[in-house]
Structures are given as C-alpha cells and as structure tokens.
Length: 444
Image (cartoon, rainbow, N blue to C red; front, side, top):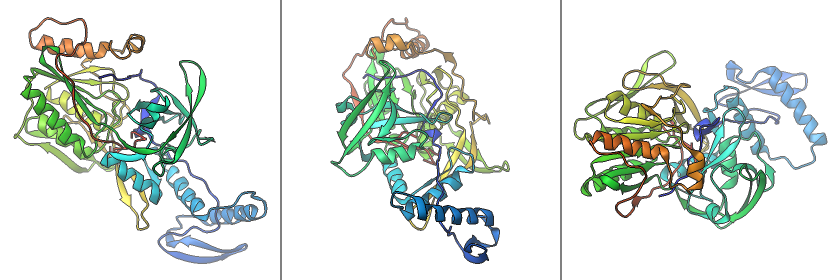
C-alpha cells in the first residue's frame, strides 16, 4: 500500500477552514423585521438588538445604489444575501465557524456519509495564507487526469480561488455527475502550473485500509473519521487478529479528523473502562463526557503514527492512547486542534458551523494550538520516500521496530509485507461533532 506523506508545513487539514464573505444588498432580513425611517429610505433592523446597525444598513443602501448605476454584470440577489451572512460569520475571527448555503450544507452532509460526486481529491487549507493543497488523491478522475499529492490548487474553471475558503472551493470542484471541471494547480517539483480537465463522478474515499506486515504486525491506515470508519476499523482489527496478529500499528498521519463520536467509538474498542475525552464551554462547564466500557480492550503492543497533519479527532484518538499508556506515539508533533464545532441547521436548509467548546484528553490536557508530542520523534525522510515511490518509510519502520522491541524480537531494516493486502473502504469528509473533504476537514 503506497501513500504520499509530506512534511509538516503551515498547511492544515480541512480543520483549518476559513470563511470569506462579501457585502452588497439593500436590506438584511433576520428573525424580526422592524422598519425605521432614515434619510435615504426605510432600513430594516434586526429586532431591538440591532444585530445589523444603522450605519451598516445605510452603507449597504448606498452601495446598492452604486451597484444599480455602475455594476456591469447581472446581480444574483441570493448570492449577495449569502455573502452577507458569510461575512458576518467571518467577523467572529474563527476559521472554524462558518456559514453553509443550502447546497453547501447538503454537500457537507454527503461528505460525512463517505460518498460524493467530485473528482477524488482530499485537500487542506493553511489558516494564514489560505493556500489549498492536495493532501491525497484517491482512485477516480483526479488520479486519472494526473493530479498529484502536494499540488496547490490555484484556479477552478478558470477562476482564481486565492483567498477563498476551502468549502467554497470544494463546492466549485463538485457538481453534477458527468459534467466537466477544470482545475489548475501549481506543482513545486517542477515550478510549473498544470491544467487538468476531468469529469465529475461518484467517488468513494477509503477511510480504512489494512494489511499484515512481516512478523505478524498488523497495520491499519485511517484517513478520516466518518460514519463508516468505526465499523471498518473494528472489522480490520478482528480480521488481523484472526490472522495471528501480534502487534498493531495505527497510522493517523495526514488524518485531519472527522466525527467525534466515531473516534470515541473506536477508542471504546481499544481502551479499558474510563474517560475518553470531555468538552468544556467558554465558562469552564463540562458539556459532554465520553467514556469507554470494559467490554473490549486492546492489549497487544500498539503504536500510533502521527504527524503535523494529524488533527482534531486524530488527536483525540492519539491523546487517549497516550494518556492511558497502552500504546506508543511515533512521528512528529500533531497539529493542535483542540476545539469542537457543532452544526446548527437553519429553516431554509442552510446551516452554520460554530465553535462551541474545547476538548481535553483523559488526563485533562489542553492540546489546542499545542498539539501532542510523540513518544518517539521521527521526521519523515521525504526524499527517500519519494524516490522509492513510498516503499522507504522511515517513520513506519520506526513504528515496526518499536513493536518488535516490545515483542522481544530483533528490529528489521525494511518494510515488507508477509500476506496479501486486505482492505475495507468507506468514504469521506469532515469533523463537527463533524470535518470537510474534497475536502478533508470538522467537529472536531
């Protein structure tokens, strides 16, 4: 099984979604409409709370007047209204709190089920530069066209997407089945822009893949935490155990998160009875606590592989394993997303995703903007990995050596497989008490 891991950079898995809004319509309408007279005409206020102030309404009226006289293209009123709300949410200065239009929310929910109509790429966005990078290419149109991991998306259908939030770009890439989309990327390996046109198709993103390595060491790669993931993960472990597994490596590198309850379900299968994770609101009140039962517990030698792209639900998983001391973390420091989002659907089919709490590991550790330090720090030898087309993975080898040491066996010098690959495949998307894919990224 070949993967393309990349060095830790400023790029964050879809957990780093940011919202960009625009302003430009005459009136704002919310729960209550109260009309007040002003010099330039009626202005609708948002109840007595004045959510949108008089000055802002007056400014919008003047802008609309300018648009009416000067704007060359045809206006779309609904798009402007959506832009106002997106901008309003952006004003919270929280990249994880965003507004979804009806279409975007439907796409988001489609993500969490694991299947969507798109091209088959998992992307991430840097919180500072807003750069959107391809993290992984699945089997599908994008791979067939030639898009590669680490490509930076610069335009979709000829439109420059610089500064746009990841959900907006994902929505542009997706569309009706069998329609074409053109994506232009910058490839650092040759310093050139590359343009690819491909058809949109139904795509399944595998969330769990597994195999048995030599010396009966089981290996499970989890790319996202979605609705299908927990059952796939448990099935993988049981299958590996039936093959005589003596130790297990769980690979969470480049896993930007997913559904919180899925991560806790997987941890319930691994941990002894006790606390898995808990969340606190802004006042320090415990909102929710997740606990494992004593029904199942993994007791064989265990290693969890992590890197700078392991975020949110991945950190919940890794943090619990580390706190309980039932496994060893190998790799590099995790991303550091320790906050939780919740979706609030609205009556018209749209929704807002809002940060509502911070989560803490079983021992009460706050990892937000800190991450989790691995027990064994190993930087990926990127050049060796790329030159060998993924065959030489020094982080994975370090994990294997750690398992062998626990088993009292001699460390090997290379990664080899002993039995035929087996895999379970699901599909993918976000972390909010969920995360986003064509996009990766959210509960988180």
